[in-house]
Image 1 (tube, rainbow, N blue to C red):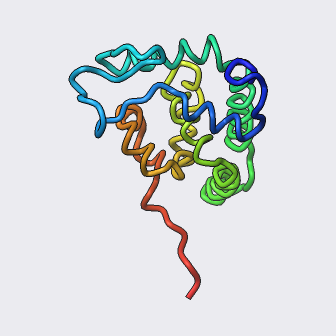
Image 2 (image 1 turned 45 degrees about the vertical axis):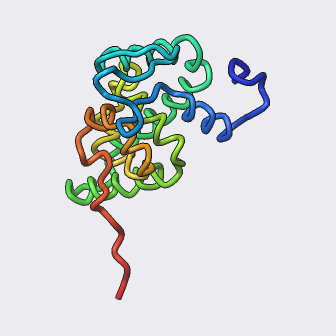
Image 3 (image 1 turned 30 degrees about the vertical axis):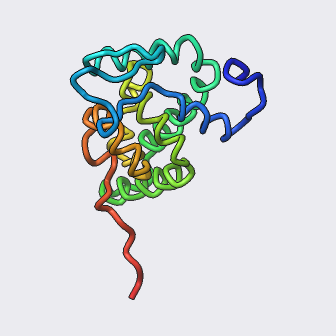
Length: 170
């Protein structure tokens, strides 16, 4: 984490910093026809170039800190998916969702944003389907959802599952 600030921030504070310094595309603040800013402040005109700028940034500056973090999330979800939690298929799927909700509840908004960017790139390709299935992007902030429509558009809507709200006992 020393690359960005000489090691002053650690843990979740570092994740907040990383999330706030990713390539951005804000439809409300930028004329879309001229492209969105990349890591170096230049413009690009399509999603693939924009994802390329994230991948370059990840490879050059973020992998040492974020790579193990994303591999941990992948391993947790893979373990949930590979486990046989019940002999009845429908109960098994419900049990898997219970465990993935525990993981989802642990992710703060910066972690959700980082996960969204990473899974849109080659680095998170193998995790993306599980992120969608388990709605791991559900707690993305409204601002990040609005400001990153290009990336949001790369996901099945169930990744965000805004319509799934807990019911309260009566």
